[in-house]
Length: 156
Image (cartoon, rainbow, N blue to C red):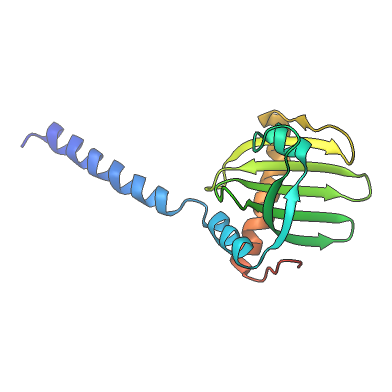
């Protein structure tokens, strides 16, 4: 076997091994929180206007979810799992002082699908990836650390 063929074979095997490892390392915090929300989460609904902009339901329909909630001073965070479609995950970050809300629609692996922002009572505005990046990174750090600590309760 020539060195070139051996090198290509090794590269192919290495690619497969790394691909499997990456798949196994796929953000386990979302799976942990999804299971916890479905098992012990608080029943809630996503507002119809938010559900519409995120593409989760046609106009005028709320989306039933199971929800984990945390509160620190005037900051409320929720991790929401669609009851009908467990792959639809939505994180809300609400500043009760300013009434500003940002919602992030995630894929099950924790990747950002869409982000919106709005003032309570106003229409949501879709955020670009660059607008959402910093806030989303902070929410991922927050929720992944909570999942790894294993101390969340439905109304923490």
